[in-house]
Structure formats: structure tokens, C-alpha cells
Length: 223
Image 1 (cartoon, rainbow, N blue to C red):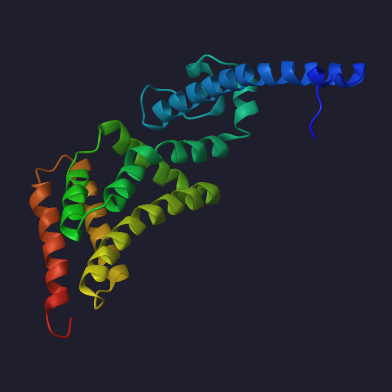
Image 2 (cartoon, rainbow, N blue to C red; image 1 turned 180 degrees about the vertical axis):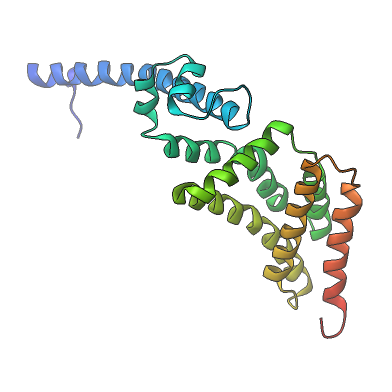
């Protein structure tokens, strides 16, 4: 049975309990401040990685832009790579998580396709497009960045495999969810690249054609 100040414990126990309460009360405030500082650093890092401004991407410039000391930047992120990897994780809710939700929300294959089409045909912001390009560039020269970015793309592609697995379940098999999902992911990635160049493409028609062509192939003999 737990004992405490109210149970008449010893003076040492009571002092320890008080210290525990005070410590518990203080931690959330410190943690909240630390989270705010970390968020400011990530916002600044994203801005520099997206090419906003003339300053090169360094931890010192990130710290200056966010209004904190260079030492505080390294308190939260041990080096530049650590900061880039954190940015990769930070942008997940803007491109991977919505796709996961669209695929996993209840509904038929056709209904889930409509949600996916709606997401894939939303034009990417110029900042996000530049940010992805810069992250790809860093991934060529930094193995940790490459691994982190590859993991995010694997998670993104898995959404399409999961989508076609719904079709496979509806039809009782006969659908190679992996092959079809990877094919749609590749097509969607190519469409995003074309759109980032400002090309005038009817994204809705293209994505629908991709999905229709892939699902039609399932019904063909020998497909």
C-alpha cells in the first residue's frame, strides 16, 4: 500500500514527497519551453532548406533565424544531419499521414480511391517542392539523411499497396497488391515531379487513368 504525507510518513519521506511534487510541477513548464524552442528551430530549418533567403543551411544560421543561441540549437540537435532528419519527420503529417488516413478510413476500394485521387491531385506548394528537392540532394551525400528519406518514401508507397490489398480482399484474391501499389506509387511520384515544374497537366484525369488501367489489367485473362 502506498504511503505519503497524508499517511503520516517520516519527515524524510514527507520531504521526498514534496520534492517529487515540486519536480513534477516544474517539468511540464521546462518541457513546454523546450518544445517551443525545438519547433522554432525546425521552422527555421525548413525555411532555409526550402531556399527562403540567401543564407546557406548551417546550424548557426538556423539558430540565428529562429532567435536562439547556437549552443541551444546543438542542445536539441547534435549536428546538421540530426536537424535534417528531424525536418524529414516533421513534414510527415503534410504528405504521408494524410495518405495513410485516406487509405485506412472505412469504405470500399472505389471509395478509398476517390479519397486518394483527391489528395494526389492537390498541387504541392512551392516551398514543399523545393524542400523535397533539397532533401533529395542531401540524401545523395549523407547516408543518415538517405535512410530517413527512404523510410518515409517506403511508408508512402506502402499506402498504395494497402489500397490495392483492399481490392484483393474484395475480390477474394487474384490481385498482386504489391505490384499494383508500387506501380501507382511510381506514377503518382512522376506526376508530382511534372507538376513541380509548372506543367499544365490534368492531374485528376491522369490519376484516374492510372487506377483504371491497373485495375482493368486484373480482369484480363493471363494478367
